[in-house]
Length: 230
Image 1 (tube, helix red, strand yellow):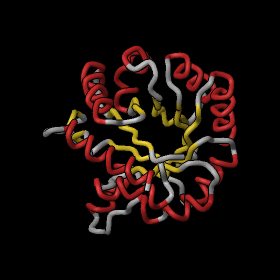
Image 2 (cartoon, rainbow, N blue to C red):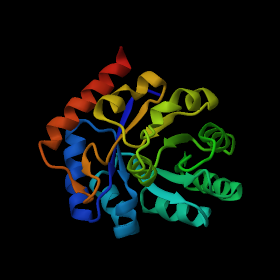
Image 3 (cartoon, one colour):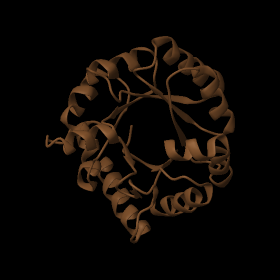
Image 4 (tube, rainbow, N blue to C red):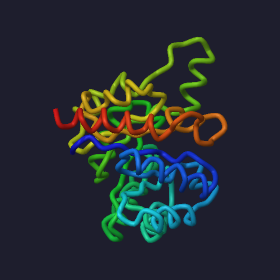
């Protein structure tokens, strides 16, 4: 897989999500993600609005599915999502249901290993159960809690090479990455680079970050895409 840039629209209203998505597409972003805050706030309406505005763009619905997997994936696929997210800590039957719904309704499945006691084993199970992608994810609350206790903040880069080596599907690293680290992900073997809070979204307010977002995104996209051709 060539290096691909995905922006996570971790916003809470459709209008701002559409505005940010338009900026991202002009800057060279490849995929759009209806982030979990947008899913919670706007649900299927948010995904439908993104699909209507961007008819040819892959759209990830970050459902973080834990149960009821078939129905959740079906609903999002019918609303226009091309990718849906299921959690590794869900029951294996739920993961299988999401994979089946993806096959039935034309959506790819992204398995997220957030919170797994063994992150590498969690990633491998997701791939073995049929997920098309693995998201190697160190959570927002986890990072903040560990740092607040005075301990070194964990990074998905800590085990990224091990996760990549354990699976035969594309890997995405998520969780507190700096711009430089995000751009470096393809060099670790993780070609699907996600940009979101706090790189482009204010993580505390869940609104678009201040500054020249389009110029910043263009620089990031150029660096990631150029890296894929070298």
